[in-house]
Length: 281
Image 1 (cartoon, rainbow, N blue to C red):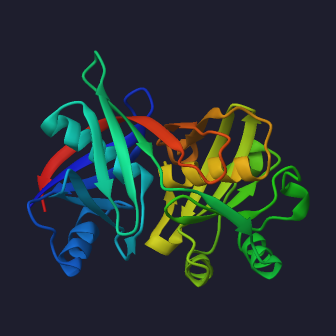
Image 2 (tube, rainbow, N blue to C red):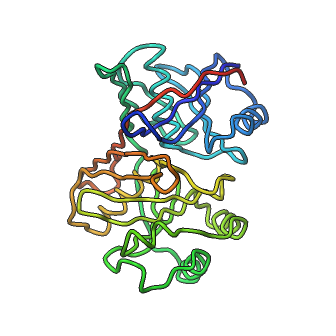
């Protein structure tokens, strides 16, 4: 089975978050998809097959199936563009329908923009928040009071924590197994730590212990969830902003986010891609 390896949200044709992409005539069994995801070793591998006027897509981390993955969606868009050309492609998730718009620049690289599932956010229980802050060795004085800690959803559920300074973000560390247990308890895909450099630029780090990965260098689903969260709390910053992620991992990634004022509406998340390699799975 041919496995494409594509980095999504690359920055200047470097970095980005690598994903596996498998395009097939029939969807493999869940056991087989999990085996391939483990073999690929990336945070997610996407599996696609033709369905109606679009494509059925499923996402597997090395340990579990996840309901939605932004960077693997962006990588899948590039794979479809490479095979079928530029255009808009429908993608059918297990519970949602989304789309990707694929374009090719003069330098031959694909840019892909996804429209996320609808968003929501909600207050996280204080006891749970306290456990997470203890896990990450964070105190209330290190949190930005303008951004309450909340769950945020855009196809998958994330926990949003905004910090006062870049130094604290750079020092992120946590106990992997304890984080995994806490994240699975609340069905949280990633814990998203952020620092707002300006009203148009966030720096982010995403813990992904629930999927068997310590940190994600670019997380499109969390970016969409963040936009929905910002809309819900009445943030006065820009409705089009950038997220820089993966810098502390040596994998700089850039995510371009755009949202409307309509509550719960889909969020646009875009980025460039780069091929890593093509192998057999």
